[in-house]
Each structure stands twice: as C-alpha cells, then as structure tokens.
Length: 206
Length: 163
Image 1 (cartoon, helix red, strand yellow):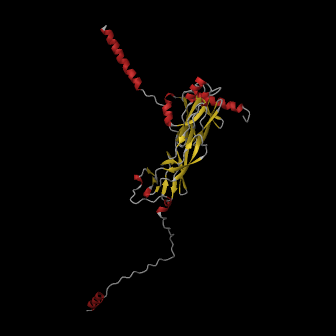
Image 2 (cartoon, one colour):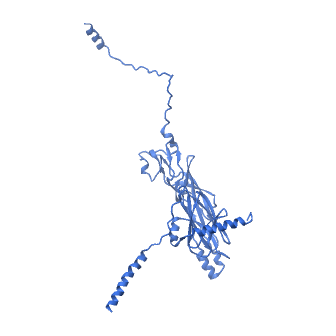
C-alpha cells in the first residue's frame, strides 16, 4: 500500500533537472596551460628559393645608371600561400644596380647588371636573389675597326649600343631566405578561391 | 675495269658514313660543373677576336686570380656576394658581379681596339651566351695559371709599398 502511494506521488511531480554551477577551485597544484595563440596570427613562412615574378618599375639605361643605385620593383604575379592568402601582385620592392658601364669609343657597348634585393610586404622585407637582368648593348667594335682601317680616326668615334631596360620589363628572382609573415599582412583569400595549388606561382610555405 | 669501279664504290661507301658522321657532330661549349655547396663560382672566358696574343689577366683587390688566353676559359670558386674584377693593359676595365650561392656567374673578356695595345673589356655574361660562343673554348691550363699567379705574387711582394 505504501509503495503504491510513493509511486503515485513521484508520478504526479515532473522531474526538473536544474543545472548546478560547477565550482572550480582556484587553488590548483597543476600548472595552468595558456591557450594556444590564434593560428591566423603567424601562419606563413615563405621558403628560400621560392620563385618570384617581378617587373622593373622605371626605365633604366646603361649610360645613366650608376653602380649602387637603387631602383623600384613590383610583384608581377601574386604568390599564393596556404589557406588562400597571398602576397598580391603590385607589392613593391627594391633592387640595386650591380654594374653599369657607359658606351665608349671604338664601338664599345654599354653594360648593365641589375640585382633584386627585397619585396616589402607591409613592412616585412622578403630578401631576393638570383635575378638575371641586364647584359651588354650592341657591340660596334667590328664596324669601328673597319671604319678605322678605311677612313682612319673617325672609326674610333663610333660608339656601341646602350642597354635599355623598359618600364615594366619582366624579371624573375628567388626568395633568398625563409621569411615569416603574419597572416594579417597578407591579402585575405578571395571568396571561392582555392588553396595555393591553383596559383600561378605557388608559395613554398610551411 | 669493272673490278676497279667496284673498289672505288666500296671506298666511297666507307668514306661516306664518315663524312655523314662528321656532319652530325654538334660541338657544344664545355660543361661547367656546379659549384661546391654554399659556394658560388665564376667562369671567365675569352672568345676569339682582336688581340689574340694578349691574355686577359683578371685581378681582384690587386691580386691576380685568373688569366685567360684567346679561346680559353677558367672556372674559379668564389664566396657569395659582390665582387669587383679588373683587367688592365693600356687601359683598365672593371666589372662588378653578384655571385650567388650554388650558382655560376659568367664574365666575358674581350680585347678591343686601343692606341698602343688592345684594351681589355670585362663584361657580365650569361650561361646562354657562354653556350653560344663557347663551342671552341678550351680550359686554361691550371698549372700555367698557378705558375703565373706565383710569379705575379713574387713581383707584387718585391714592388715598393704604395705601387
């Protein structure tokens, strides 16, 4: 009889489970572990030897350039990184005139040799190497020699050709050292963009 | 008579493949081995041209490092970074190059017309240009070069300071 009464009592009252606050003791014997930093803050390392396609911003010629002079570069094609982030085309950088020699008498051609130095990604410099731009102008020494033999000293006055690098001239280089860049400094992935393996230049990233 | 004609034909048959083989032979520029890991190297070469008897003596900081005769080349290991090389006869010419680690840099030396002697002209070059003009190049004898460098060092040591 008693058991029937108890059963009826419990059946009549709904069971309400209220969440109990969990009390965590502030005194702990184990060391606390800091939460990991957000992965987006420091995501990308562009590895050494990553190819970089550049353009030379302003015209340069062998008669006016001087060794040690700096010149402007820009990124011709974006470097796509993990997660669809990228170093955008148009990112600026700098190069240096390694060697320049004016045209000379007796058909001597001008000479020019340029080197890429860095790309500037929001204040982070990516060092560059292995740019092969320049060369020698038209060598007129043969014409000068023939003219000298035929008409004399006038042959010596003939000069060679200059080396002219036009604005926007393409140049290829490589990253010279592993460089870490915060993701916040990179261009955000475009909607619907695919990861780096669909890029024109794939960033060699860790 | 018939036998004689056959002999001639046989000789012609033997000779013809040899001629054809010679025509097929393609001369290429001497291959340049890769530099030691982490180092760079410079190839100095002197294609034919004016002043065949003048050798192109290349110096860095006054010290002789290479000498290439007409139609010769020399490969030199170099530390990565900027280098300035000079050559001198009646005039001095300088070329600055950037040596990259694990890469080969090419420097061409030509002799151009001068008043008393030919003038050296050192200029930056490329693997493509070397491949194009280097078909007849031969390596500079390293023993000759070592001897020339030793003689030059002895001469420099005897020279008064400041010269």
